[in-house]
Length: 151
Image (cartoon, rainbow, N blue to C red; front, top):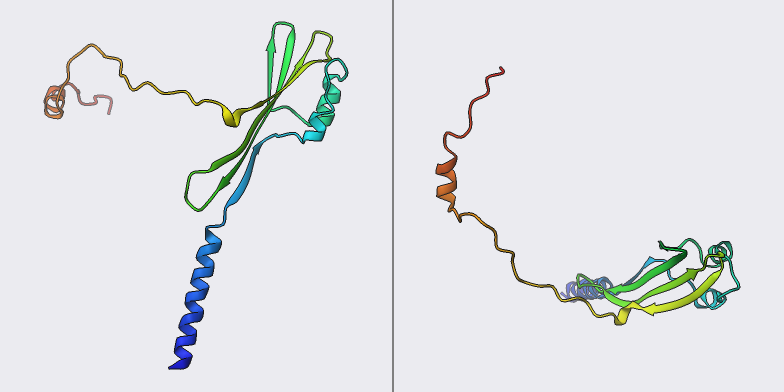
């Protein structure tokens, strides 16, 4: 009897420990978040595209507007606990703009964690035509299809 109770306690303890471990949060990195010390070395007028690529790696996005070229390093760190939606710990965008001479002309960091999410509109666009019930659709389609004659 005493042995059975200790075995039951051990099993309950193992189940409790496993359930606590299952709820441990997991952290994920998405994209490219350059290290602070590497990003701080980039200064306007000093580095070329190749030097920036060597220091920070390949950009997430490249945009070309007129004569300027812009590189974006976009990254996000999240933490997920069990089956809940992930919490965003950090979401940063490092923007590096290059001038016509190929050198860095501007460096800007944006904390996208504080960005305002757009509000979606719930309205529907009205369409012309009739609203048919399922029965009307079924009866209306009878006789519309001809049998295959290419057999």
